[in-house]
Length: 139
Image (cartoon, rainbow, N blue to C red; front, side, top):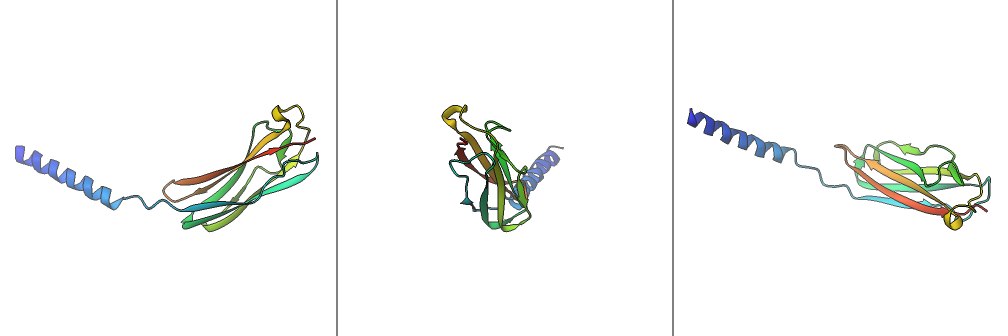
């Protein structure tokens, strides 16, 4: 009985080692997020501007998503659409268009803090991301 238990423990340990070797994680992708165009520091009510980001990777991604982020949602500067996405590959360009909606004079510093967050999702669940921050004054 003792020999069976020792054999079972040894077999289990071997299986654990082999499983770990077979499921070793792929190398982390080398991803570059390049801001092609950002937001101007000043926009007038009604003006629109587009943030464009180029994503390049040394490994194929499943998809890329760009989403706006606001400190004062619905005030000052708003997104025209909710965001943008691109399918799989090793390069993608995504963009988010913003519109100056109302004055930011009453905001701290007189600006609307606005950001675009871009993420590339890979097989296995890994996500690489980059945040681009802007301060926009709307007189």
